[in-house]
Length: 343
Image (cartoon, rainbow, N blue to C red; front, side):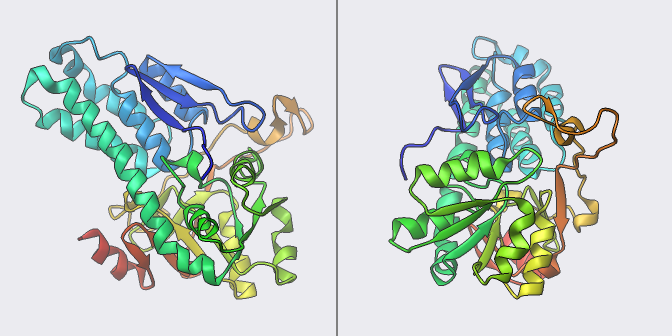
């Protein structure tokens, strides 16, 4: 891959977030030296993508703490954890990463090394995600090789993780190996993560892609131009139901109609075995202005009602397979997920 800006970095005891709201026009970063900035960065989508916000939160618990003694770090650590988890409720990686940091703080009995131990745990979370994304690339590669004309939704590439991506990882791997892939990119209303981020990534890396509006998907499929749909997810329940960017379920239903395989690509950290089914996943409801405005400009009549759920849940019955860093999971998902999560 060509040199891509990193979504999350830890530099000189400062959390550095690539401001994804500004892409693709400008590559700017936000420096976070207070936990409130980290919360706002996650909530306002400066950083987005389930793995990336988990990594950001892990580092975010440390901002402003490098000169503190252990007692001061511990004093409000649990409150800081709960605060960051509340930023976005649907993405399980956020709570997963924060709770790993919480466990690390509880395990550390050497007061002089507390900050160092916490930083090493955050770095481990970051590195584990990089390894997981590369494993997803390898697991999903044969599927892309056999189905090189793809469609994806939202952004599940390197901007959403540490490296490569989840849904885009097998596509990048196939491209690296010389497979002639083509990707239809849903623009992904209302915030256009497909148009702004996925098209930006793929085009920058010379992957053949075509941007389409969300409501073109059925037409493109009816023309026989889509071999496979691959998406990421923010949470996968124990039964295989998958919460992903709003509009994902539309694609899964279309795939069933047109007999097109529909795959979800996630690291195991996105699988939540404590959530029985999609019915138990809290769906984040964002401000309606995201639907009624774009880039601060109104696009709807003043006073009209609008809704902006950030995610929908694709039922497991519509999912052909779940591509993970531990292998390809197939139905029945209750069994395959339970088996892989037990190690």
